[in-house]
Image (cartoon, rainbow, N blue to C red; front, side, top):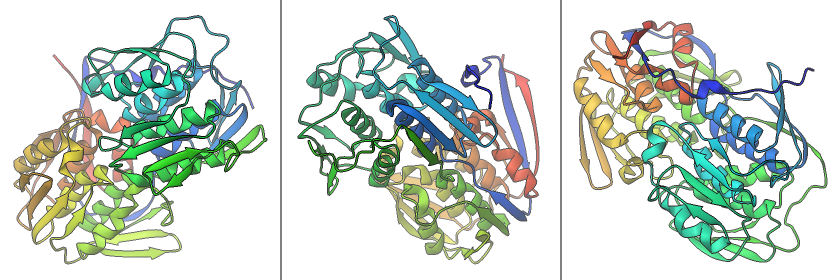
Amino acid sequence: MISVKISFISVIRVPYLKMKVTIHPSQLKGIIQAPASKSSMQRACAAALLSKGTSTIYNPGHSNDDKAALDIIQKLGAVLEVNREELKVNSPGFPLTNHDSPFTINCGESGLSIRMFTPIVALSDKQITISGSGSLETRPMDFFDEILPQLGVKINSNEGKLPMTVQGPLVPANIEVDGSLSSQFLTGLLMAYSAAGANDVSIKVKDLKSKPYIDLTLDVMKDFGMNVPENKNYKEFVFHSEPTHHSPLTTYQYTVEADWSSGAFLLVAGAIAGSITIRGLDLSSTQADRAIIDALMSANAAIATEAKGIQAHPGGLRGFEFDATDCPDLFPPLVALAAYCKGETRIKGVRRLKHKESNRAVTLQDEFDLMGVKIDLEDDIMTIHGGTIVKGADVHSHHDHRIAMACAVAALGANSETVIEESQAVKKSYPDFYSDLQSLGAKLDSGFILNM
């Protein structure tokens, strides 16, 4: 195997080009492999950086968010070796000892990377600037302004937004954090505490959302031999002087799971315009978006689990109720599904949607209105009025990958073609989305145009 030093410059989009895709009403048929989970992949990258030695990551992802994470761990000292099937990460361990200060890491548009790697970067006594692009530049990061000084870290942010400059070293202490905005902040703190050798200290958490993602974090930490804290009902995470799990190994192996977040769009596409079979999705996964199966069953979708994968095909879809508070990324595919369900569908968890790549609740309401689907928003509830004709329309992704995919899936059963502008947004999480749809029989046209 040849060792290659990689620069992931592709996380930066060409500013003067934009892509539009035209989706024609289509019938799908066939078998498709679900893509790699960026939630799993990015956590594995962070854990591989923090675990001194050689880590082999199988089924690595190649979305823009994955590339951002790989670029970050390279800048923080890891050396990467790649081939088609696996990624090797050789890490001297962290914090840094061989870098000049100051320097900058760029998280691209990855919300997980900025929230997870900031506490990890703060382990270093170097002055490090953390930047990002796109919607990440406007997302609130004042969580760190409040928490990191309690841990001995100097931080200077742009009024709670990027760019941020931090300088540690982070010293673990007993703290309490608010988990209502995102569990990703907690993921970063748990990994940083473990790497810092936290002893007899705890992180208390108020109102933690997306608990399954913390389960994923703890599982990844265990697989990479890190000290895993005791989980006290998601309200407190205690690091013991006697590690609950610690491995003396210097070689680690990890297989990135197939992605339920992306798989949800494929399953809904099958329920609208199938039948198709999706391979690779683990029904025992800790990923929060595995709950799409529950939603599909509530909608009376025709779903069957087979040895080859999960089969989805059209049936008598009906309105349903679903709580997406712990899995807010399911809102876009669920809206596409609800558009074809007879009657009203009510989805709880709207408050979780404001600080995504777009304000997703409003964006879904606006774009699906163009497609003839009425959506009401009231407090924490979204109501979708389905069962009417879904219209082909000119819609916009708002630079949000999940909005682009939701519109594309809904377009499969529309009464005419749908044009999605800024459709390249899917590269953030699922760069092969359109080609995968085509392989299943979707009729689509795509091209780049000048963005004047």
